[in-house]
Image (cartoon, rainbow, N blue to C red; front, side):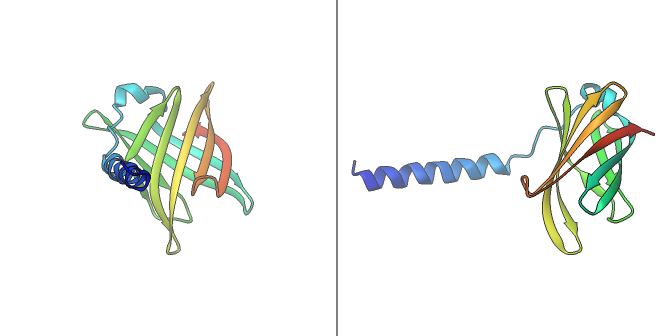
Length: 135
């Protein structure tokens, strides 16, 4: 098989399988697997513009984790991609701020009675860190 045809087939294979993998919805996180995270949390983040606070509410919805983020500067955001990575809770969502779409990932790491918070926007283009405390 000529080299260019092999290359084209490999590229086509990865393009098709990559699209199929991205199209699959994440498996919902069961409430029992997120027990220590459930409830209402105040997430206080440090940003170049000053402190930023989010309220994260994790509730049970038919045995699965439902998440909503609220703040004073943005509308309520439903987060449907909630998962565990080791001991961390990971939230992923597509947001919109003043007409600008962005991809966000919030990683929450338990540290005693608090959470270490890492807020990653656009795959590292803008990062904030902070602490979460249960309300």
